[in-house]
Length: 373
Image (cartoon, rainbow, N blue to C red; front, side, top):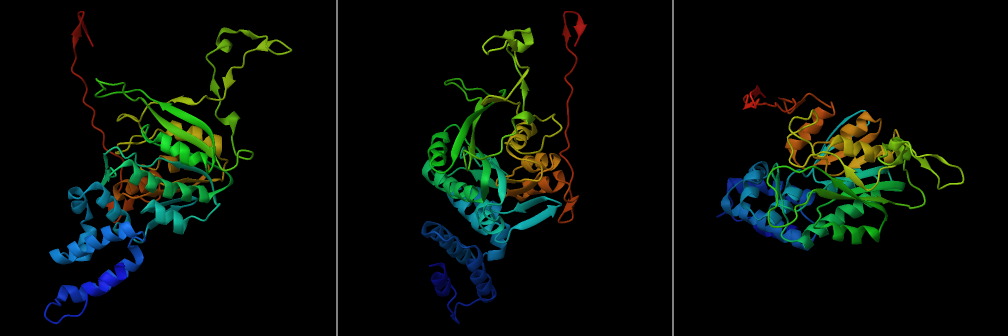
């Protein structure tokens, strides 16, 4: 359909053929072959984009470069479709040793760059469809159905990339957790439904019970064969061991164990501005959370994949723990964080890369009870 409409759009016409049209015909033809959406609904969106571009006299290349301005004004569902198609037809790849990162759309990169059955652990923390602004991307789909259709597409790809003993951890919003649960349980084994509980701050709910957790699905390709290094993630107990109690439940009395495997409620603080790991991202996940996941479900040398890398915390922790990794990120602003954080390069497109500059303002001294605080 796109090819036929392009032929009509650029049909030779001496009275109307301008220099811009002549110059751009080949660009559009090539671009449509490489980047045009394949589904019928996405093709209509893409065709609308082409016609508007032609009618306004803005060159295709200029429209691609200045995509951010268009996305700010467009419906979020349209800006999402255009970004995935036109943002980076050919992904940018950078690597150092066993750490590889991509700038581009996760779905085509998973399709084209990651072999099936080649990954031992996947951690997926996608956009939640709750309206957050992530650099040049608006995290909002028209409805839950279109959002979940997109999620089902990348989930199927992730499952295909896992090897026979691989593990998949999926984070999502509390609102969409039932959809993820029903979809995943038909395709993989769900071992645990983990609750990441964190402290809360800022404006709190006043007319309902506010959320202070995010769900994480721990899934495996094969329930009978998978990696789980319990000894690497033990935590101190808060029961009888602290009080030196004796356990009489077995045949032989013995002290309570000091250590145990964590349960499915995990308490890790969210990343705060003053933390050394802080990067400029609204949904950054803590290194401690990723460390537990990577230690539990992979071994040194294994391949760890994060299709929505954000600040590349997954890759950073995998690198520190001796794992290979692949991180994929759509937004160039966050991709540059990965380039720096993973020590792949110290500059990007001649732009020096440096950690965020933090400015702390000390509170003025306050007198309380005759003492300076």
